[in-house]
Length: 557
Image (cartoon, rainbow, N blue to C red; front, top):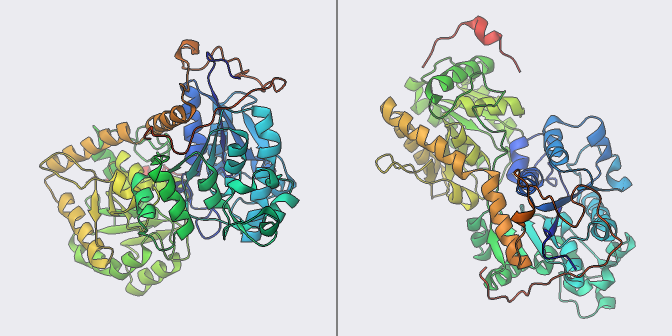
């Protein structure tokens, strides 16, 4: 049993560094991948927990070829953030040839997805959990969905976080053939149909990974409160009825909450190396104009520091992100504000990209609209140069661009849904509150109305507008950060553990533990036995500027 004076040990199981299954995102689109939230839980949450003194460990697949050879810079930063933020022995790589030689963590098909997920979970269940001996396990998304069933069987409290509504299914026989002893916890899994007995279900009754995670976990959280409510209320017809029911059950028992993700700390206009001119809330006006001229020249747009720029940072898909809405009114928007040289900048990949390119070419508005491949440095420059962020998503589990934008004084224009509802407040200049513009009717009229509202704000007297942007930037720095997110998770961990996560008497000035009887800076000792606490599901604890061309050319990425 863990000694009362030591910190409880938390194992965070994350199957991806920056990855979403096919159809939900792609590796090349950084902001799209991070909107799923897994990278933030993996890098930001772990770093924040450790800095506060928590005894935190992380289990991730050993994507050996990717990590050691041609690691994309965006993945390298996330992985290095984890590795550099934790002492040796706290990162546990699940080793299997299934992901040793992968060239990408954006998998190609469901069968391959499932096999990799099974291999990962086998290593976590059979090797990493016995090694770490955690007091609490935190699983993330469908690729860890079997682990909560095991934790319930052995009595380890488990939190299951849903970032994306995507799942795979396979029979018990496939799970067992991969080396997971599912027979010992089969009754804690969720099946396509009610399982009358083990023998009958083993070969012909598929296990739903995501629903199993919800069913087996002691607590569940989504990455926004409103998105959780929307799923429970059945507002999204693509959410499986079984998942909806299980989430409702957890909610009713006080074991389901929403916790917002937060932007990576590197999104800071005062230190962002991608910007032509860095700036703070106090001096944003002049710097953003310099950045605007630089971006306009780079992309071949009309160079006018007074031109309003709307920036699209999200994946260009056909369903979720609202591409069809903007495509139908893009020319009207540009023409309506021709006298102000309104410009639209896309820095994103996806299947809808070709359609936007066709619109730009056919209407010859390439000096007003730029459609660019995703590149992280260009995306960051767009945040620092633009006036508004466009996010007309049909649904949004959390979203990050609407939080990143205000940090750079770039205000979001969004549809009122999910995480967008929880993070964007209608701009009220007279009341000195709000940080963006929302529309409630999901159609082209609604989006155009929100754009007009944004332009009405843009055309306010400079002093009035700048005062509001300064306020938004300062408030966003306070509200959208990993320390806030980490504290929410700490509160939830402590509720599940029924004891403090961090013993402040045993931490140094940096908050790091100095007396953890669990070998805080070394590999854990597994020679001693321990018991685990269990929390009941029915617990009643409720849970403008001129710039020389020479100077512009002197700055490059």
